[in-house]
Image (cartoon, rainbow, N blue to C red; front, side, top):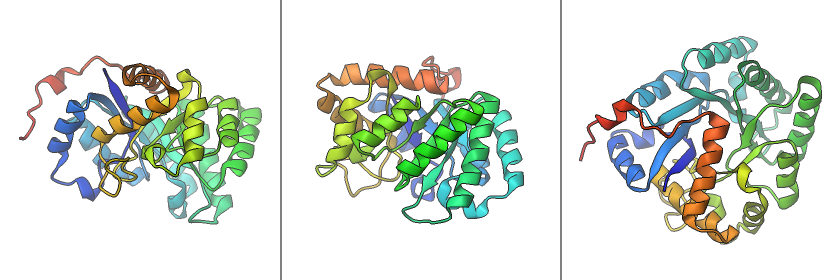
Length: 272
């Protein structure tokens, strides 16, 4: 069995000094690839260092909607240049809309439009964050699709209703579920997990946030994506092995990942 955690933030200080131990645990959990998201372009150098250290790590570059106060138009060129500079960059983002903690809608849309344009130009998917903004985001993407044609991508850490889920499936996007799907009161998300077609389904941790049951309340880590996969498999009445095969195939297709282990990974020494 092979699992792919499609959304991690391993460069955060909370993991400092523990990355080798984390890697041991994610390998024991049969996590074979990871996609590292990016909050702002300034993280790029630190994420590259991690990818150098762990060859199973691919990554993205972009600007999170809650960080658009840092947005300037020259940043679009910076993201484009960085995304073109390393073949391990497999996506643009995370980008999107978030009206839960911010109300700067115009600026968020400007940054999102620029990043969608970059993704289209480079032929890369987008990692989309959406919180309290589903209807506005749907309308925005529909308009962009009509003006510029569609872009592949994923609604990450998805938390929407069945109706909202269908909106983004109709736009051709993948849907990724995080530890929230394991929470007892997450009924809307669980219903959404049941309805997503098997060829559009992904799993993630969004670590260090949102640790799944039975680790809820603790720091999240890539090994815990197995709990997410188990929960989604149970909801869909399939085996964990089947769910893992489906989501791994989908992640490879969307992000252009290979399951062939890099030579460097075979010779990496793991600290005990």
